[in-house]
Image (cartoon, rainbow, N blue to C red; front, side, top):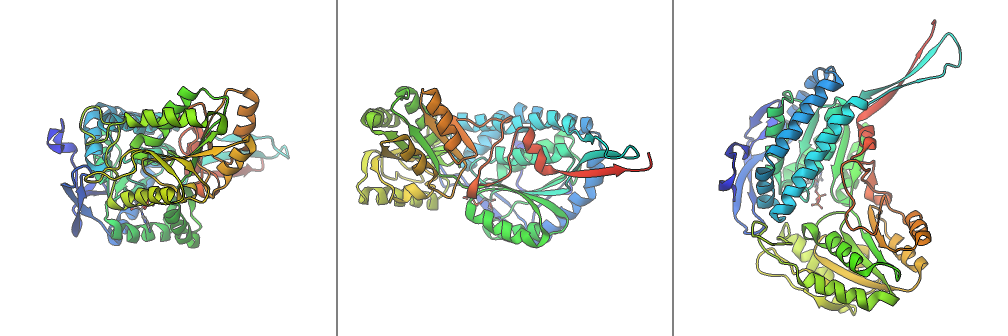
Amino acid sequence: PLALLKDPTLLKTDGLINGEWVQGASRFDVLDPATGLKLADVANLGPADAERAIAAANAAWAGWKNKTAKERSIILRKWYDLLMANQDDLGRLMTAEQGKPLPEAKGEVAYGASFVEWFAEEAKRVNGETLPQFDNNRRLMVLKQPIGVCAAITPWNFPLAMITRKVAPALAAGCPVVIKPAELTPLTALAAAELAIRAGIPAGVLNILTADDQNSIAVGKVLCASDVVRHISFTGSTEVGRILMAQSAPTVKKMSLELGGNAPFIVFDDADIDSAVEGAFASKYRNAGQTCVCSNRLYVQEGVYEQFVEKFAAKVKTAKVGNGFEDGVNQGPLIEEAALQKVERHVADAQAKGGRVLVGGKRLDGQFFEPTVVADATADMLCAREETFGPFAPVFKFKTEQEAIDAANNTEFGLASYFYSRDIGRITRVSEALEYGMVGVNVGILATEHVPFGGVKQSGLGREGSHYGMDDYVEIKYVCIGDV
Ligand code: ADP
């Protein structure tokens, strides 16, 4: 699939340290999850490379923070333009290494680029404050300054957007970055870095440490232990988030964490059922169910349960599974064998505990899994507690509003939640009662660049995107001037 790139020079396979592409002492393979075929071998960088990248970023910091906000803004805007000008190639790289259907991949390129555009604009609005003096001989100011060298550790499910959502605000604020992209999807990250260089981001300001799974752990330790790295932003599993937090405790690092979810999707009796079916389908099956905001548990009120389940199953039956490069495919492969096994385990457990399989239920040849719907789900099933991260929708039945709220909140996670209702009182009550960082009412998709994305409870810390997304990359300094 990569032979068809319009600009073959976007296929980069080396890491990037201090503006130079580095081959690394060894290499690791990147595979196409749709075919199992090797796409490329990529530099496998380790702890010593991580130390060099941190030092390069630190050396580049002064030059970058001393540019005016407008100068940084212009460079970021140029990066945005280049990402969009190369949308087709970036989409192609992404589908090849990640598997999502090509239109969805191009959609992610636009979404990922939109964070660069947004923070190019926000760069000019990192405003400080003056406060009223408590003594007329003094003046009080609040400065916002770039926090320093930032590290970003990112997952494979959004190979571009999870990088730009962290890196764009860091760069806009005046911070250099060291990025450790997911080992399964480094090619999109490296192409984006090549475009960053073309946009004029100076050497050392943006570094990329590609690494296999073992070296990722070793590089993570170096990033956490470093005194020079002032901030770590991570998107991925709650389990790895906890490890990074523990490793960062000795250096008391600032952290932004976007971790796992267990999104409830609630359909009340008064909902528009057709709209709820569309919303549930979009929320559950995009990216083959591999997003942290995908609905994990569908709760439907008893009065509309059978009607919803029937319409939803009919909709899911229309989904086309296949290689993401084929026309009309809605769902590509899962990312790896372990992901398939988890979905299989959740479906088998649901069946064993009385779940009714209405659609799908089985794996297909290769790394594909049928879009699956299981009715009569119950709270003792694995899928009620764990994030499936795959194309499996368990549908639970409930009686009262309070019962739905309690079930939805009965999890250590708190990222995205969704519900459908047309009653304004209920919309208000339920929106307020859900212990989640994000609530979608009568919608199944809610992320965009200018809204705060993030979770409560064990789904993470901090917010990404929006004007709040800059907060984690600046330190607030109070300056008190006397003898005025
Ligand atoms: P996912 O569930 O999305 O596979 P992971 O949390 O396993 O998420 O991985 C997300 C990112 O974290 C990847 O870039 C991966 O290489 C990295 N990672 C995994 N384990 C560690 C670790 N112990 N230290 C640092 N990075 C890690």
